Amino acid sequence: MKNFKKISEEVIVSKSHLEQLSHKNINFLISKAKNNKSRKFRLCSHESDNDPVHEMFIVHPKGIYVRPHRHLNKSESILIIEGCMDYITFENDGKLKDRIILGDYKSKKKFYLTNKENSFHSLIIKSDWCVFLEIIEGPFERNKTEFAVWSPEITDKNGIKSFFKKYKGNL
Image 1: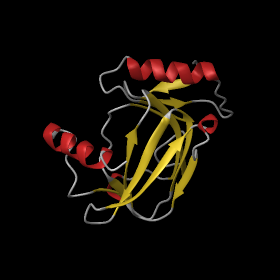
Image 2 (image 1 turned 30 degrees about the vertical axis):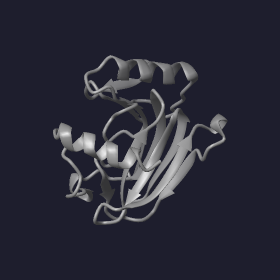
Image 3 (image 1 turned 90 degrees about the vertical axis):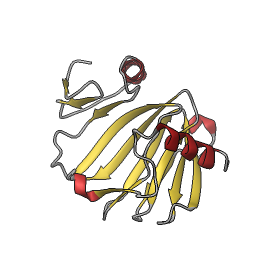
Image 4 (image 1 turned 135 degrees about the vertical axis):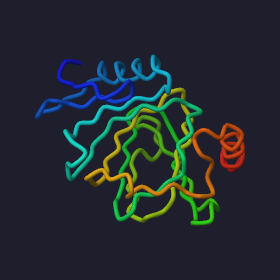
């Protein structure tokens, strides 16, 4: 992949004004995820944090913890490219609100969703690797993402185990 700028071990940004991706590119993104410490990777097709729309091809491995969060006054859309996940939403107190089972188009599962409410949500990756397109309103402002106070910090290994036990068990 030539028309990209490396931002970190986990992120590259497209430099092209006419972006195109193929199956080969998706395999490249998965290989980048496999070979970094976090085992996740993203390709941003938007140019800057200030862009009005952010489009990101994201790779997550099975077992990754996505801390429950919500985007204040922003909608978020997800389209599954490869793999499957549960998109879970929560009440403000952490009670499970909804679980949407998502898979790629060939899986015959729901493959797309848009969340227009400011609900806390998380992802539980069900396949070895899940590749998805996430589209969210920009600009990116850290203070517009709120993490659930009842959810474990990403450094709390015991809390994360309990989180998975609680929410994976509710399949």
